[in-house]
Length: 66
Image 1 (tube, rainbow, N blue to C red):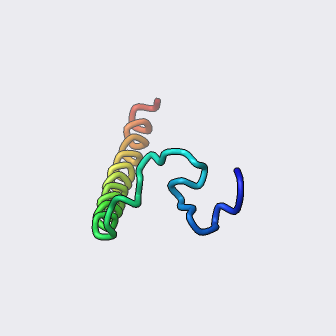
Image 2 (image 1 turned 90 degrees about the vertical axis):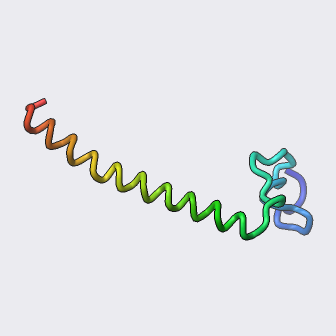
């Protein structure tokens, strides 16, 4: 990698000179806030599902003596 990646003209998207997977620069800050909110909500829902499923799986395993 040439030069200082934190220098002017570099962004997180093109820091390695490659095409970014998600070009953040094309989205407005409002759209990014909405996307981050959805991601946090999805993580919370997934956490709740896992939090309820794992204890049930242990309870079933204990009952069945697996």
